[in-house]
View 1 (spheres, rainbow, N blue to C red):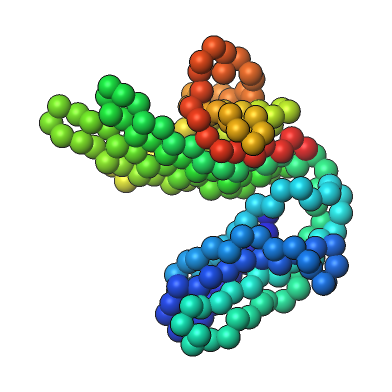
View 2: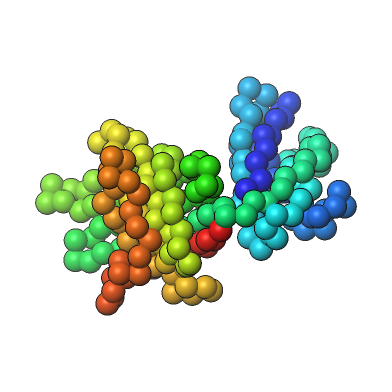
Length: 219
């Protein structure tokens, strides 16, 4: 995962991307994205990149541009990161609409872990709408990954989430990466005292699983 911070002397929407490669000539770049930034509002950004060689050194830098040409396109300093071996990660999103209860839920995960060192880092967001007899309930939540275990194309993540309506809580998610299409995910029980959910294909027996678009990397 590449990380960086955007700063600007002008308040604006900045387009940003990372350039990267095995030399300081880079040669590759991530898709361009947009975020708000200003003099007193630096923006921390990150991007997961697939297809890197394990145990190799990569150069990368953060670049940005603003659409109104107040400031020229610029890139930050060259940084070097070495990819690890035995590093699990998962990122992607999934959404579903569940009739007849008119329940909508959408999740997004970006998480990585080094099982050998016992470290994990990553973000989780969830939004939803649930129809009730008295109207509708709209909610959102965000949190940090507490655990991540990958086994082949399946990853299990435990997250501590803060919901605007309900407060703090814990969510478990198990994800199955089936390549270009057919990815699935399900919610799973998660309590930190019980450890992380297990990345097992049994979660997806039969027709179980909600459609999504995820990438799982096992080591």
